Amino acid sequence: PPALPVVTKTSKPGDYPAVRASIADLLDNDNYDDGSYGPVLVRLAWHASGTYDKKTGTGGSNGATMRFGPECEWAANAGLAVARGLLEKVKAEHPWISYADLWTLAGVVAIEQMGGPVIPWRPGRVDDADGSRIVPDGRLPDATQGAKHLRDVFHRMGFDDRDIVALSGAHTLGRCHADRSGFVGPWTNAPTTFSNLYFQELVNNKWKPKKWDGPLQYEDKTGTLMMLSSDLALLSDRTFRKWVHLYAKDEEAFFKDFSVAFGKLLELGVPFPQQPAA
Ligand code: DDH
Image 1 (tube, rainbow, N blue to C red):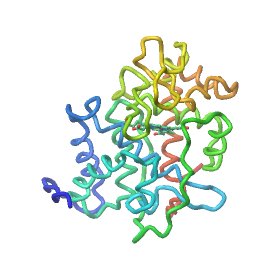
Image 2 (spheres, protein in one colour; image 1 turned 180 degrees about the horizontal axis):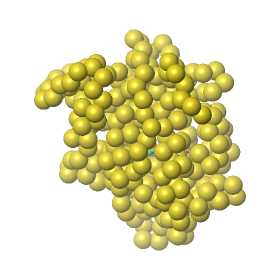
Image 3 (cartoon, rainbow, N blue to C red; image 1 turned 90 degrees about the horizontal axis):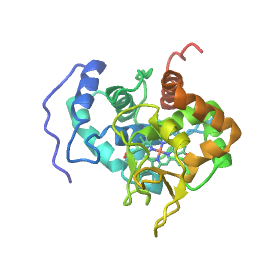
């Protein structure tokens, strides 16, 4: 088993600013990827939440079920052990917070620290005692598919077409890893800064299939930036494309829509004592 994290800070139950500070402290690391754990923490918050199904009320961030098999071993979640392991240090410092609250708050803090919008967040998630409420595999999106699949997946969570495009803008962050998804490379040249660059790159380049032995992905003419088939679906679909063009030229509109949609994502299926005002 890994060594227990060294506890350097403590806090009283409910001191969320202290938890935020601990998360912010561990984001930067020159030896990891592009110098920040921010992107992988955002992906953890998203994959913990994106299993939600509106019809049955199952899935979502409540429960933190990704601590258990088989969810932690789903192909879609490859690499997220890095994010979960990192947050053990924060959990040790603030043992009163649930993993489910911690994972979602970490995504929020990462986005804010990387220059993104403030995301509405409230505590209230509780951890399941075991993996009995894990949903079937296959609810997270498949990068090889197109617009219909994106609608199936995100409408199932209760999002509309505009939300789908706004949420996809998170790919301005981070990169694909051969040993995680099989895909390779970043979507932008500033993968640790939250911005609307993803939409600008999407619109301003000619995307060609990458010539290699790996799975189908697309590259710009320099071969440094990438797009997945699911990313390019946002350009080929007329309704999606309208929002892509808006967000490419209006970063403020993107930040506003992203903040609302991401905040909603993290709350899907969470039984808060008081529902937020619509
Ligand atoms: Fe994503 N994403 N994502 N994604 N995602 C990957 C990485 C990151 C899809 C596939 C992949 C969202 C939507 C989609 C982030 C956030 C979000 C990778 C690469 C694949 C593949 C994983 C790896 O190899 O490490 C697909 C398909 C969709 C879709 O169809 C819509 C959404 C909605 C979000 C969000 O946060 C709201 C982030 C951040 C990363 C970068 C992770 C990293 O380690 O860097």
